[in-house]
Length: 147
Length: 79
Image 1 (cartoon, rainbow over the protein chains, first blue to last red):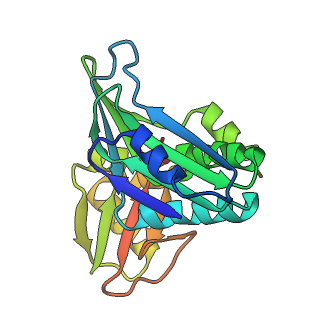
Image 2: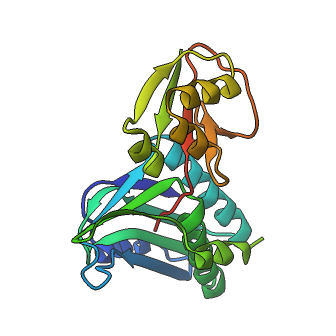
C-alpha cells in the first residue's frame, strides 16, 4: 500500500505498468487518473495545498479502510501538490484485487473520499483572478453513498 | 506558546500562514485570534472548519501543551 504526494508531474501510464508488474495471483487492477481541467480558459494554474505529514496520514487512513472493506491485495495513491497546469494529471489511484468488482469499487470509493475528505485545499488562478474551490454538493453527496 | 497554522482560504483571509500564540486551551486561542482579527475569529467558527491538535482532529475545547501545534482546516477538496 503506497500513499505519496509529489510536486512533480507524473506519468500515469508508467505508474500503472509498474503497479501491474509481477501480480500473477491478483486477477484485477483498476485505476483512475484525475486531470486538471482548464475550465474553458478560467483556470491557468491550479494550486494545491496540503498539510505535510497530516495529509499523508489522513489519506493513509482512507486507504486502509478501503483495503479492508474491499479486500484489496494492494493499492497506490499518488497526489500532486503545488502548482499544476491544466492537462496535467493531478491524482492517480490504482487498486488490485482478486476480481474486478472490488477493484472498480475501491477506486470509486477512494476518489470520493479524496475529493471531500482528504486534507487538500485547491485554488484556481486565472484571467479573472484567483478563487478557492470548495467541494461541490455532488462531491459531498457522492461520499455519503458509502456510509 | 502554541504554533498556529492556517490553511486554504483562512490563510488568505488572515494574511499569515503560521504564528506563535500564547494560550492554555483551544477556546482561549480562538479568543486571542479573534481579538487580534475579528474577521478571522468569525471565520474560524464557521461550520466545516475543523481543528487539528498535534495533527489529530479534535472537536470542542482541549488544553494546549506549551509546544502544541494547532491547525485550522477549512473544507477540504482534493482530486
